Structures are given as C-alpha cells and as structure tokens.
Length: 139
Image (cartoon, rainbow, N blue to C red; front, side, top):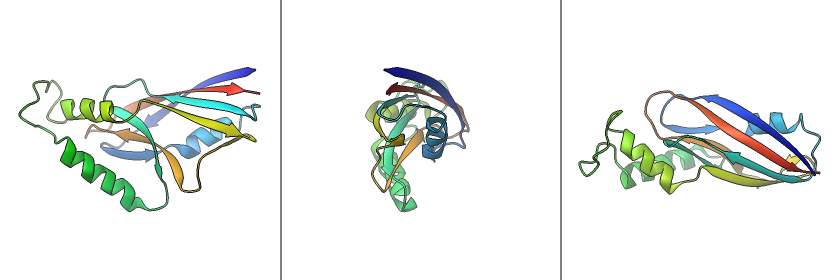
C-alpha cells in the first residue's frame, strides 16, 4: 500500500460554494496510485466540504437559500459574535455539514457520479484563504 498527502490552498470570495474538483483531480494525476481511497479534510471551523450537483448552478443557489433560512446571520439567540453577525452562524453551518469526505479512487480517477463535484462551502461573508488536506491511500 502507498500513501500520499497534499494540502490545497483555496482563496475564497466569501460565502458560497467553490468547486475544487479540478484542483483535486490535478493533484491525483501526479500520483501513481490507481485504486484506493481519498480522504479530504478541512481544518477550519467556519467552512465545510460537500459533494453536490455540478451541472445546474441553481442547486448551489438553493442550498445557500435553505441554509440562510435554517441558520440566519445575527440571530439574537447567538452569544458568540466575536467576528461579526455571520460568525456563530458559520460555526453552526459547519457543524451541520461535513469537514471530511472519503471518495474511492478507481483506475486513477475519482469515483464520483456523473453530476457530482467536490465543493468547499464557505460560510463566512468575507474572503478567506482555506486549506484542504488530501490523503490518498491505495495501490
């Protein structure tokens, strides 16, 4: 069994989803692992990872509309507001989504469905630099 690790740096634009599938695929192309499992982990508490539809941008818009209704910025029940009205909402959004994904690798390619992409989901309004740790294990 072989292992390989890499850290992706993503310069975000503020709240929303950033498709990172191509960045992940470009790194995988440098690996000699054909069959295995890729783990993606994001070491932040106000953004997350998700696999979502990559064809219709309305899906991403609707996801954000739903999250905004579910966890509104500046809700008066939140005590933690150290970095603004989106601070605690971002932490809750992260807790409701995922900070880690596992994706099989088959014939050197991600075993994603036809319409699936990997997204960094930024929950803060202002631009942030984020890191995604990639860990690939396989043969």
